[in-house]
Length: 194
Image (cartoon, rainbow, N blue to C red):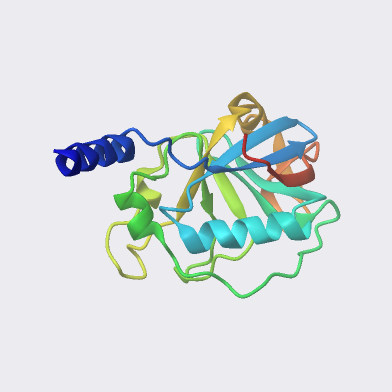
């Protein structure tokens, strides 16, 4: 009688167990505070990569250099003076497993920016302000890989939307989509789990 009861108790404990706290990152920007919740179970290499950049101070002083209202806000690669920051080797695209875990390019999600090479993401990221389904994983081809979503905004989506609506123009090497009044990440830090 003890064994079945013990097994039942263990199952109940496992089902009712409190999930491990997701890792959170705070971006303190000149437009306000944004808190991201990262999903390491869905995109482990991508989250490790992003957190390593945060902990190294890479994002401090970078700007949101590409802002398109109704689409996304992108940053993480350029200083206020448009100097491109050095990066580590890129990470493999994890969009397929992230999408299977329910992480897609929907409003409020954060994803890695990249070149035409699906496995070229390094430090730059973007936050979706629209339902950008065309950026999701479709198939394991160059055209179908999509962009790896690895978390979501849990505080400060109003700040993200404010950045998205900023007037834009040419800036540095970019002919358009650069906020006229620069929006900088003053600091990025990993928040302690509560």
